[in-house]
Length: 173
Image (cartoon, rainbow, N blue to C red; front, side, top):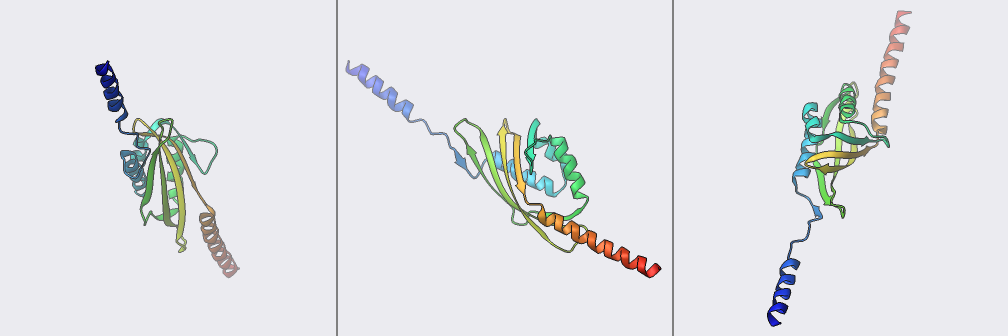
């Protein structure tokens, strides 16, 4: 009987000594993927970006409706035509959590810095993102930022060009 009790006690002790699942970290392969993602955006490496996402990834960028990786890349290329000096001067801050359902999520914060072509106004736009990973690929992304500074810079450039055009028209008359 003593042997049975000792065996059961030993079994309980051995099974209770398993290491708990780490739910929060600031270093992981997924975090490195997000840092690479920001570098790819900075360098306009759209093919590299594509490799970081699952084929059927859902991307929510300032939207409640998902877009595909191809749509995100298309929008990124179109937007970059009007932007110069694209950078994340303070780098990207990241943390990863594994929730109770076992899902891996990386949260990131960055300040994008750049300017609209033709404008001298430097833009500094905080961006907050959340990425879900499955099998090493991004399957969901939620990214949000305030576009007001960018819209104002576009308006500034448009107003300057319109004023210049009006001056030239007046000179020609």
